[in-house]
Length: 136
Image (cartoon, rainbow, N blue to C red; front, side, top):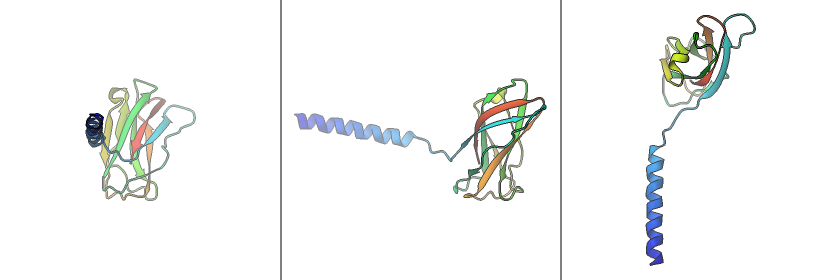
């Protein structure tokens, strides 16, 4: 009787682990950024460098989680740190309007994995501080 109950509990647990494990999404590495650009004063437009995974993905991903000036925005672009001619083809605009949404931009030519990339921000207007995540 105990053996039968134990088998049933183990079976339910194993099934649960299989279901949970199958539903966990896999993400490439991303890095938190905190940039300040525009207006007067010191500028901090760069993210830290991050190694691009070797999965063949040819897009950079950007997501703002905090915007200091809700009436302003920043434009961001991803660059290969060794060869800055490898960059995202267009800027992604991060603002209060798309807070929490992930924006993707394709690279202008083959962006090799295993190399460092960084994000550079520009203000579209007045001084602004934006925090979020960047995945090369």
